[in-house]
Image 1 (cartoon, rainbow, N blue to C red):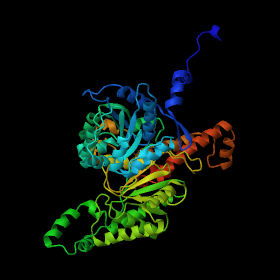
Image 2: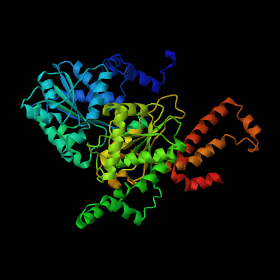
Image 3: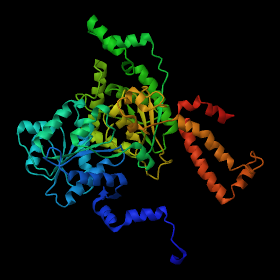
Image 4: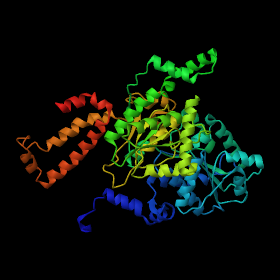
Length: 564
């Protein structure tokens, strides 16, 4: 063999050489392999490079000469950001020269804090979750090696004591750092200042799953620099997430002036003429009309039919984003009345507002009655959340989960495939929401493969996304390059259908009479032709399923062409 000359180097050779060199393979085993809930997981390339660059960064001294250099890791949603934090924590622990490193994992929401602790614990790490500002202060004073907390606990901790820990071997990993470190988010940015006052020499490492707004580039200056980024385009190419298909969905709502007047009279009872005039100006906007019963009934009927016809009994689920708690309850009432699809609601208690809540008494009573019913059934809010979420993540009911703002961030349910948006969202909130449906689903029991996440927009957030996303107000404050490949117009799939149809029939060109089923069957007797037929039929069927679920298909020239 050697005498015949050099052998051609193949891509497989390069992969084996790159991956299985002893020093690299041993490093992967030692630092980049975790057991997540008993399942062995090996880091993807973006996790390896992010951790390595982070380790190189923290070894440098910051420009002020106090602590270590920090920075931001921007990895798109669904790409394993939480496990990257776990692997970074392990690398810090194992790094030579790091004297008793301590880690504090900071989030800005209680649900994310619980989820972060659960992730670390499932990977055989034992974080202590700060239950209060006083508890956080004690954990820091006791030099607890691994702490999770929400950022507002630093405020309480500083009010209790002016303790300052100037240890430079404290590493603060801030999740969703774009929200908690910038002036745009008001109170959170003040909390960030107090956190840095208590831990002046700590090394701050920010993690974010969404691009940074132009006005929020100071997130980078707050942490140091951009350590590593992994965009949605890269994640889709690596098959780490599924691409997102977007469709603007408008329904006939028959909103009449008389109906609006009756609705307005009901919510303005007891107000003065001036107050009514002011309220009418506010409610003349489209988002106010979207909360009326009439609009909800129209959208709920369309959602029910769409899910029933195209997703029910496939093993896949959907989320419906409602504009308020009262609207969420009304959506469920209509869906239950129609009786075709099962649904459940996850909201916060009545005394805990989510975004812009409705203030009329009927809406308040509706939410209060719903919450009382849930507490009677589940006893505690935590049990209510856990049981409904577990049911939604499973293969049974409910098919549709109705939310307002909860579960739009950091919530992973691989079966979740369709997002019905009935609420005005923009920027980070919109990007976080649509990423709820881009997770891979690897359950072999599903009746079809998850190829896409589907975004059905009932609010006209993007209109027709055939231009750069930054031309729409919902994404206008982002750099265009950061959003490339975020969503795709469902019309792209509709345009593919005729080509797939022609490719399917091309296999039968040698058959003289294409209406003779016997000749067609005999032609498929050849194994290679039959395998090619199965492959092309699967591709056509998948695309056809997508097209049939879209309103755009029924009015397109593609449909007319196929019907001829």
